[in-house]
Image (tube, rainbow over all chains, first blue to last red; front, side, top):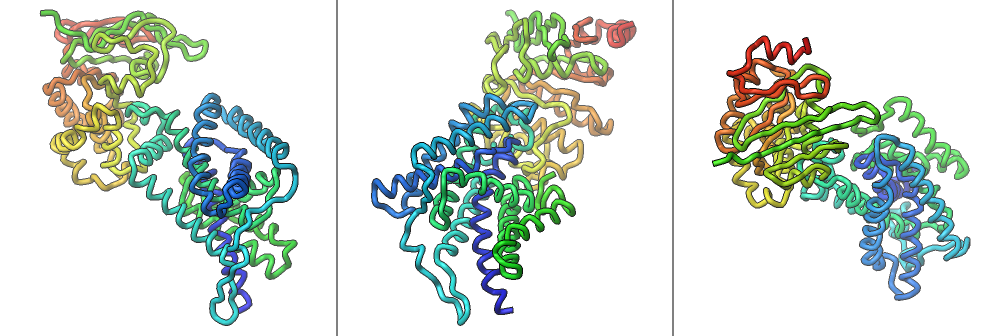
Length: 287
Length: 238
């Protein structure tokens, strides 16, 4: 049992990061009914923006969030308002294609500007550890990822529950026509929702950048993680995001523990298939 | 002294792709009236209902709301000018509470400052909504949802309310109660346009009635001046 403590703990901590990676995509899928295929790339854009700020200003990655989060809000607001809203309609294909196109453009722009070299967001926290008991040594960074994920999810939950704009976004998600009849400009609401989704992606991007190396083409890898979390947890559900993140991450860490690191992805996808078979809408899906 | 027109529609044509759903539709609603638009299924009533606030865009024709032209304006703008809607099927927000549904009704800037007063008035009009204010919208009965939909429309401080088939799927006693409250709302100065299939009730409550058939207005008049035969012929197209 003691031997399982470390993979379970690592899984839980990683799960918090997975949850915040997927949160933005879940918000947009649940509200705008749009599969944002550029979500992973926009998240990695945040990582690169943080890299630039760290180089220019000599600040820590976590401090760069003060600037990255509002920047990414505006990126999301204008991407949705200026681009994706134009193709939103009854058919799913046009927004999918536009988002895919945006993903391709972003990856290639990042490649031109930053070259294909591996990058990471260096921080003193990367080498810090916490010792719990006699057998458990946890990287501080993993703890920050988990707490960061929890804080973001809680903040977004409270925003949607308690604020005027949050209620309007929830209403638009329920019934667009009725929301319009309340005097709400739903296109603008969707732009705000994307802005909020990108704020969460900004946090995810910085945490990812601190934890892993990243490249211009890393985005799709995190898009797949987002899909996995959403499929397991359910669309548009905050607690589903957290549950999905925890379950996916623990499946991977336990899979690596029992069968070797080469099998961790397989275990993750295995759990995904089981959930799809038993409850296709996800554990906390709204359908 | 001439009565002000709350709503004036002239020569409206609406298409769904190549299908012409409304043909040269015209209508006048005087301030303070209750107007009923009746017709069978497929007559074009709901299309008309969706065109007035801007959900659908007419290809031809004009719409004036209190002498201000509104055709082509998006719904969130027409609402801000004093028009509220109670759509067919209630369409309350199922995952918002009763209070949050009503709160959403006062989204427009002109209604925000009057929210608390409006809430008090709606709770007086529909006491059950106060009792159930913390319940999710989808846990209410059909009649309660209809009250919530009407209450939500009233939260925007409207000058005119459009109601699309508010009796649909409701028990007769519930419908009677809702219509009684609609008369109260009208007596407070709000103009009401009812789109209905329930001919008898519409004729009883309205000042004037329009009959629609296959996308056209085929008959209009005061209920007292129209014979049952006339209405039947117009309704069924015989």
